[in-house]
Length: 323
Ligand code: CUA
Image (cartoon, rainbow, N blue to C red; front, side, top):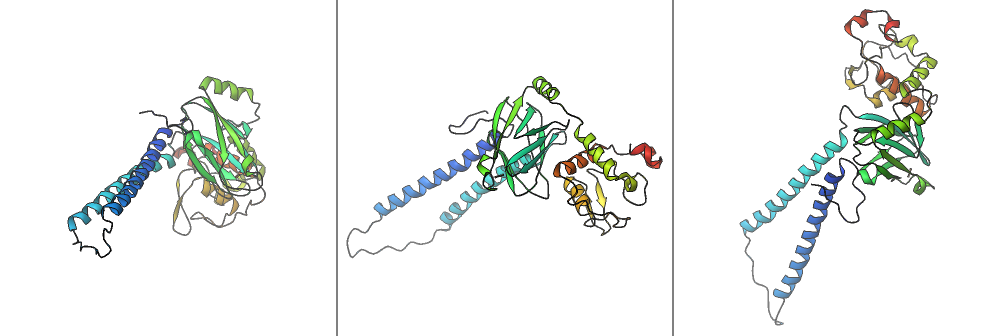
């Protein structure tokens, strides 16, 4: 049921209608009760006013029925609102498995973005219409916040960890991007544009931007430069193998287990002793301060691109798996 509210930004993502409907419900409910209560206060003040100086109030016996009614009705209303809000929230915060991933790095005072195919942009992001899109975001300095009103999505962008957001753009056009966390002198100028294009047009745009390597290839370069393979070869006893690691549950030396997501990979790179894999010694030294956020993102992109080894490959020599 598409509808367009006056004074609202354009609805250009799959969430826009849902978020607007929920907003309308919350505002409508608040307005209804505000008017109802204000009217009752006025009516009762007139109706039950003291009419002569010696008049006293009459006793009011409590009424269980009345109390049940005014408890149950608000309870039903707030539980309904909670269930509706939770439904929208879960959809908003769980990217579908097939979403295409783009990287966003916030920095005083600009947005740096990168496509999976390697193209970089500054304060701009081109996207094809209809594509479920996931943003993996981090900051190089302070807390920023990524807000695209037309998509009805907003998420804080934090230094030292990754946050994600996802949406499906539904309408070609240019949409304003804002930083919505005060981040210093030029916070108000930390703005940009999301350009949503028809898929063919997007492909033409991608082809028009010179790019040396895809994200995974750039990551492979960093991987080779740092010599990660010396320890992390498949079948190595010095360090865990990395192929197919992303997304898997990892058993730790502490007995706990952790899912190998972006934040885990990042932590293992910068703070290797935080979560040591079961069966290995804490032998790796930190790469903190040696890598830019872009290089870390590229490395993680490379690790995610490595296919899980088939059972035959596990037994095969290291070189055949880690090209
Ligand atoms: Cu970045 Cu405000």
